[in-house]
Each structure stands twice: as C-alpha cells, then as structure tokens.
Image (cartoon, rainbow, N blue to C red; front, top):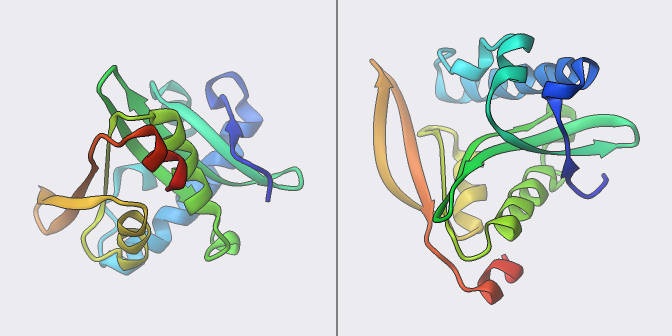
Length: 161
C-alpha cells in the first residue's frame, strides 16, 4: 500500500468511477453491519461524487485505488465526510493510514467524524485514534449514527496519533 496522496475525482472520471466502486463496496459492508442500507453515499452517482465539495486523499495497491478519505475544513474544524476502503483491503491498516493523514493535515484543529452506531470496526478505529463519542443521532427513522470528535490537539499529539 502506498502512502495516502491527494486525489481529485472531480478532474478524473476514470478515478471517480473506481472511487465510486470502492465507496459502494465499503458502504455495502457498513449497511450489512448496521442492518440498514439507507446510507446516502451508498446511493451516490459518479456525477454526485465528482460534484461534492470535498478534499480527498487516496491510497493505492500498485496502480489500484483501494481506499480514500474525504473531508471539509475551516480554520477551526476538520469534518471527515467519508472513509472508504475496498473490502479486499480491510484489516490491513488502510483506513488507519488515511485517517492519520487527515489528522496530520488538521494540525491542532478539532476533527469530527460519524459512523453507523452498530459499525463496531469503524468505531474501534476512531476511538483508537483519540476520537471520543459525543452524540448519537437518528438522521432517518431507525438509522442511527454516532458522532465523534477529536478535540483540538497539540502538534505533538497529532504526530503520534
């Protein structure tokens, strides 16, 4: 696996199509874990993915995109919008490397993320990286997510994450 690198699906339709395939596969696994397939990125189209105002990092195995993370940011906060890993690359450190790369870019800013309340692998990953649960929310009837926050951190804490 290569180190996370900036990717631009808005500028590259072939990349966007591969990213969407990884995203759909990853969210299909989450849907099975949480028992609900109403996860918006699971239904996203290539056009919608390319139009989303997100910053992206991707990681590759050889020339094949196997994971990506997307976020928005402002001066005080980084909000991780999605983390997707191809199921063939699960449990190999891909997601951890992508989140760590975002944490490094965040510096000492607060970082937010949310995942399905019953998605225990994702919850364990975020908690192991210093995120703490702050609230459960029900964006649609019966669809529960847990919101996490990684408080502002010193530069030293960010580097050691």
